[in-house]
Length: 398
Image 1 (cartoon, one colour):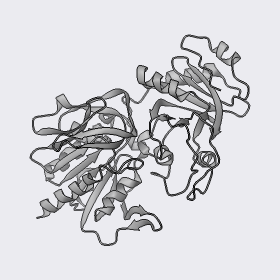
Image 2 (tube, rainbow, N blue to C red):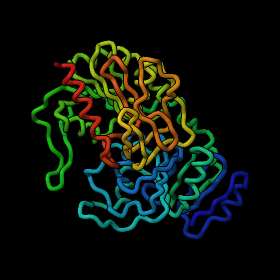
Image 3 (cartoon, rainbow, N blue to C red):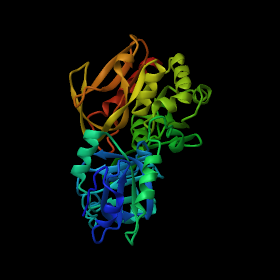
Image 4 (cartoon, rainbow, N blue to C red):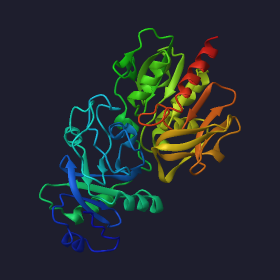
């Protein structure tokens, strides 16, 4: 159903060529207009249009706080066919701006499904569009970078394209945006939920061996579950926590979570805290945004990527062992490895484009990775990193 009106064409021509039955539209900032069928909530939402190559885990993706400010194009065509449930979510309030699908959502076919994905989207006020040539849109993003766009859904198919285009062009973009403050918890809380098992549900951590404080820049639930699963008591603190806020809990280790937005913007308040924590000697582990913030605290620089890494099939090489891990990723910024000081060693690199995927401080129990080792969704190749963190804690405690 999609009708691609190229950049430079008049919006009046796009409006005149609206296909019969179109109830949704995606308008990009360059003037491209894509018609389709609406799903989920009604209204319009603006954000950066990116793509995700995962074949499973759409609920986890849509509820990943790292997608704040983004409209997600799914390259896999059959999104929604396993329905939705109350367990496969990474946060209570999704931060994604919308979604773009190739095919219409079918009736759910999975024994764990409790509702239709369309109904689930409406309950979270998420706007979507189907009937889009997602292969063409993905190539557009791959070749030209992630554009700003507006996804709009109206049952009567009537849209003010000029207003939607203006909204897309006025949106400032993710560079320079601190979004961690919007998705972080507001108060400190304890987390004791462990990993999910078939027939048993989620475990509970009742006999912790050590205490980890997790700084929440947009933490996914399964990351906290992985920490609890290693035998940790987990205390979660807000993104703007100070060194004193963290250390009053007397942690055996500190974890820096994933999150959205520009690390340089979040770093204005996060970096001083991280530097102060590094001076205490406490073992530290960071992922995704936490990895980028750790690099900034060590004196390195970050930059915006043209298209980012988003999917559950990204190969990463461990430079110490030569082992290749298939990883789950979601990031649009990257650490510039040439800016790292001599006291820091690059530990992992992407086999897609050679970008930095990990680091460690040579003389301190501090390390981080760019990808998501908790595998929600994705492969479990990198679960060992949580145990590496615990080993550092045990070594430090003697």
